[in-house]
Length: 232
Image 1: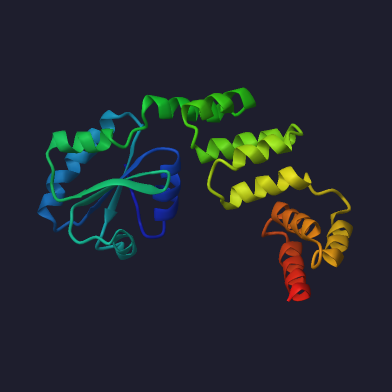
Image 2 (image 1 turned 180 degrees about the horizontal axis):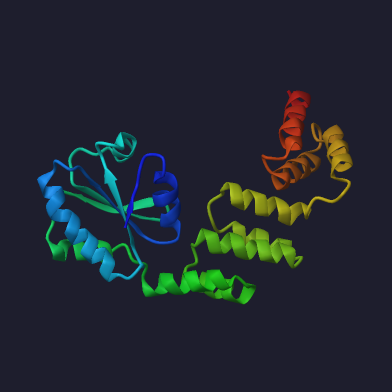
C-alpha cells in the first residue's frame, strides 16, 4: 500500500499501472463509510501478493486527484491498468464485491502469456504474442522495429498498417523507409529540402528523416519550419 499525493500521482499510479494493476482508494478521515471500506480493500489487495498495488488518496489533502477523477462522493475506488481506468465504484461495498472488483483488474492467462512473450522480446516470441493478440499495438511496434533492424522494412510496414497510427508507429515506419540516420544526415536533409517542395518522394523522405531524428533533435523543428516556408 502507498499513500499517494497530487505530486506523486503520475509516477505512483499512472506510470505504475503500466506494469501492475493499481487500485486507487479516495477517502477522508471524517468519512465513516471510508473507514469501513478501507480495511476490506487492504485485506483483499494483500491476498494477491503483489499482483495488485493499493494507492490511498486523502481527498482533503489532494484536491487535484479528486478533480482528475471527477469525484462526486467518497469512498470512491478506481482500478487502473496501462494508465487507464478499467472499473470503479462509489460507496462502501462488502468483501465479496471488493474481491470481484480486484480480480477483474488482473490480466487473464492469455494476457499474462503475451506479456511474458513481450518480455522475451525476440522475433519468434513476438510472432507468437501476435497470434494470441493480433491487435496488440505494443507487440506490433516492437516486432516491426526488430524487422527493420533485420533489413525487412517492407514486412515491417505491412505489419504497422494493421494498427492505428501513433507517434511510435510513425517513427518505426519512417525508420523502415529511410534506415537509421547516417553521419551525413545534415547534407542529406539540405539536399532533400531543395527538391521537397516540388518532389513528393523527396518530401516524404525528408519528413521520414525528421521523424526518425525525433522532436528532441533541434534539426527537426528547424527543417520542418524551412519546408513549410518553402511550400507556402
